[in-house]
Length: 371
Ligand code: IPM
Ligand code: MN
Image 1 (cartoon, rainbow, N blue to C red):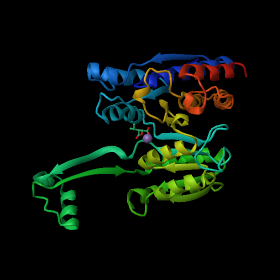
Image 2: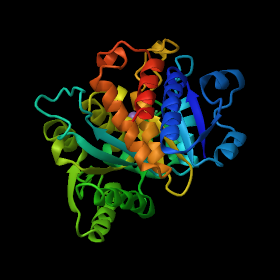
Image 3: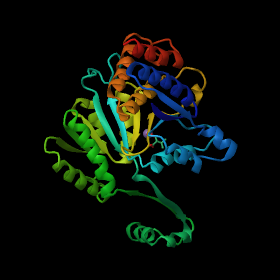
Image 4: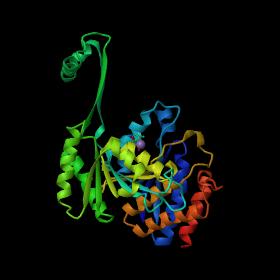
């Protein structure tokens, strides 16, 4: 018996999580485990009613779970950033989910915009650092005399750019990215361990040619970690170049390890080359603690409640959840059943089928039960 917390969230979130739950329950029936689901009412509706994003009670209750199955957040009635930072980033940081695992894998039967590339070419894992970099939330905006509050910024601006920082018309903003040895080393170890079970190649992504302090440290830690895995081939790519290679030669990649913000950006590109955002799953993993599994797409408010959204990204995220629980067979069966549903055109309309969210999920669940 596994206890799993479910947070549907906003927009299409509740529908896709419901579809995923049916699939994971079917996997449990077939592979001999039960999932005991607990629903959490967290999201825009509650925020608008009570002003609460994540409460102390939420966090305390959630900490009793190893897994959180998460839909999506984001709602037109709330200013962008509030729910994202208050809920999703809040959970990732609170539970120190330092790995953001994002498989980029083209499933048989799907289409990629990259002519001539197929499922054998597009199959890699992005391991995104998930707690540091520009996501630490340290920054500010200043104008006029307030500049003097931050001497470093004042000095840099007056010396480098000749800016008159005393003038009220000047305004500046800064945001600090932090990389730590500990923070990068734990995510790199995860990446190298993952590569040992795959093609034994790890590509590090950074921008050390310009942001040489933060990503210089990142590179050093990468080199040191690599030394402990002599069987693994390694490579450095600058983030701008990696976007080019993802499109031109996706077959080069096996495991890609990236700092938080670059990881965010390149995994949307990864989602696109694997066939679209409707197919891309993500895991926010703390190997010793509470992990959260979600589609990497957002809440698509305009499709809310229409039973139209493609549940595959969420169902695949459920497969990552099962893998993390130590059920690799059931996890693989979920992905196989997804592929079967695509081959049989038993999908939502975006993939050429005619099914609703619920029906597409139920078809995949049946395929697992009948395996
Ligand atoms: C993602 C999203 C989030 C991120 C947002 C919603 C905070 O884009 O999961 O990729 O930037 O990490
Ligand atoms: Mn993103």
